[in-house]
Image 1 (spheres, rainbow, N blue to C red):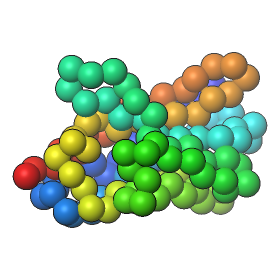
Image 2 (image 1 turned 180 degrees about the horizontal axis):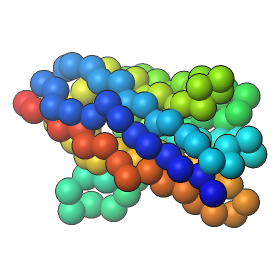
Image 3 (image 1 turned 45 degrees about the vertical axis):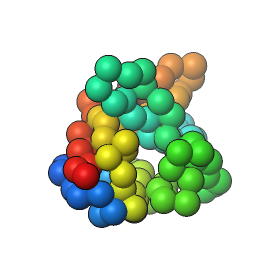
Length: 115
C-alpha cells in the first residue's frame, strides 16, 4: 500500500507561480516513477508530468517549459514547480504512483488561476 498526500495548491493570478508537493508513505521502497495529473471542472483527468527514480522527466506539451517536476528521495516527496500559470491551468492536481500494476492516487489539491 502507498499513501500520497498533496499540498501547495491555492489561488494565484495569471503569470504567477505555485509549488505543489506530494509526500509518499507506506510501501514506497519499490516505487520508481511518480507523477502528476490534473482534472479541470467537467473534463477528464489528464497527465501533466512524470519523473523516474533516476530523475528522467517528461511533460505534457501544454506545460512544457513552464512546469518542472522534481523529487527528493530522502524525503519521499515529489514536487511540481508551476510558473507562468494560465487560467487554463485551473484544476485539481493529483499525485500518482504506479506500483505492481496498480495506480495509487492522492486526494488532490486545487489550483485556481485567476485572469
